[in-house]
Image 1 (cartoon, rainbow, N blue to C red):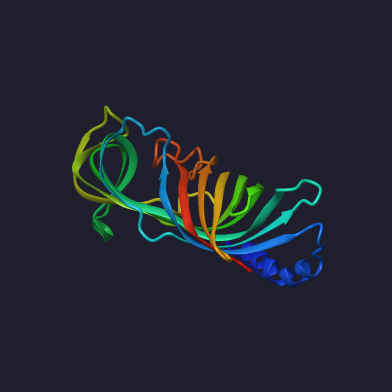
Image 2: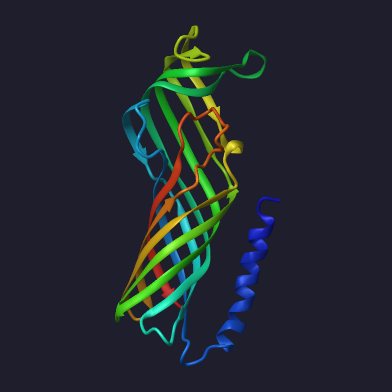
Length: 253
């Protein structure tokens, strides 16, 4: 059910392109661009909390972006337009860090021998995030001169795939909080994938450089304003947001 409405919307967007092109007028020009790129960034708290003492490694991984954008240029306001469309994009990364008094939920062992602990963990943490979204942007566009176009606005996303999991090792957890009983953790796992919110929304800022005929280099900043976990979820004790930079190429259709 999570993907039904975005898929219908995506099909509808493609079906309406021929109709929209047929309705073009010389005074109200429209442009259509197909964008292919990669997301680089993180699902992160801002600022980093004191529980995260050190980042040992970071890997952005392969986070593809495929988008269809349409810009309606306003004939009465030369150089100005409105851009929208549909993105299919993935946001994620892998990181290893050292944490202290990080409140979380851990599972130790498997099967009948498995045990679950909730409390403050100190030790090494490795997280893997890969979330897929259907995204609709809405931006004001400005073309001050040939070759460059700038966009500023926001976006709304539906999640169609979720992955937020990892491991904890070489440390200990105090059950219930900092004053709880101490349990040594050699290796444990966590999986918060089903706890993430189905929606995301935030700000967009982008620039297109038309460097060759119909090809443009596109850069875009995505700054999420909605925490990825609900406020009553205690597996992560701080708010985390999607903050990613998109770089790719667009082709004018």
